[in-house]
Amino acid sequence: MKIIVFQKINKAIVLLLCFAGFACSAFGVTLKGGYVGCLSAESFDAVMAAAARKDQGMFEYYVKEKDCVMTKGGLKVSIESVSVLKGRVKVLVYVDQEIIEMWTNIENIQRYE
Image 1 (cartoon, rainbow, N blue to C red):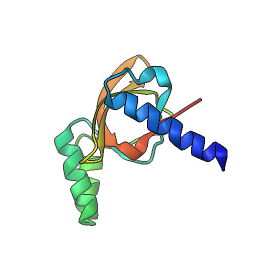
Image 2 (cartoon, rainbow, N blue to C red):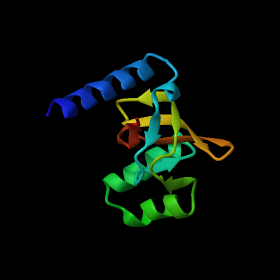
Image 3 (tube, rainbow, N blue to C red):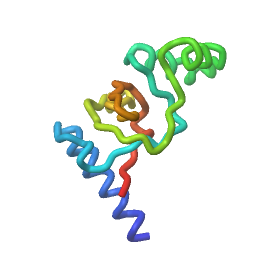
């Protein structure tokens, strides 16, 4: 029980530091995976609206045809900005030798050891 509480407090501290503008990649932040990530905030908002309406066709359109993907877990990221009210986060994803700017759910962010 104490370990779980400590982990939640630790994650909260990391997110608060990120909100304050500190570089979050130094804290070991990764994607959980299984959440949508989009190359633009507009596409992310549209795919989330489709999910909220349970519009499977539109959701699949954004994931298959537009600039959105289902994210893979374990990818290292740096948090660029957080929009708490919209539940989204702008991250830089490090894949091989590339850096990809992406919007995803706040829930998709995790700290690794």
